Length: 127
Image (tube, rainbow, N blue to C red; front, side, top):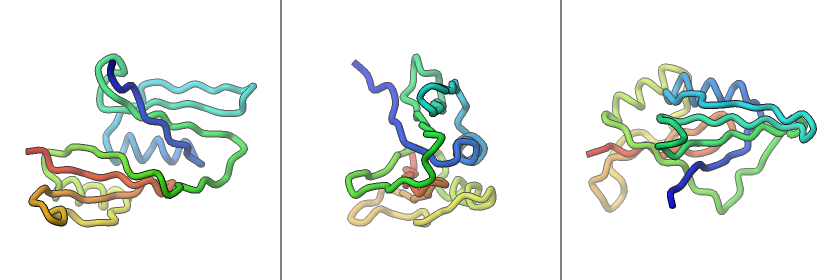
């Protein structure tokens, strides 16, 4: 067994695709409209679906708002230079909500950013 993908619902698919591809550097792997269900699925990631866990962006055409909910935590992405990554994300219009630095009670370097729909993404310095 292996994990295939995580799905989040997004309000503006093009805005979200721009964020995940242009700011976070993921690739759009596939996208399909389902007119009878009034939704679109787009899969993005850093590698192919055959070899990597990816992110499914679900856009329900008639939905204008989602509540994140109290059970949701965050997506985590490993980065090689957390300080430069945060600078690049901010310079490209991304929202850094917790600057890079040590995690509380640890020396692990982390930062948090937020996508256009308010989902939190943790950046973790790879060692």
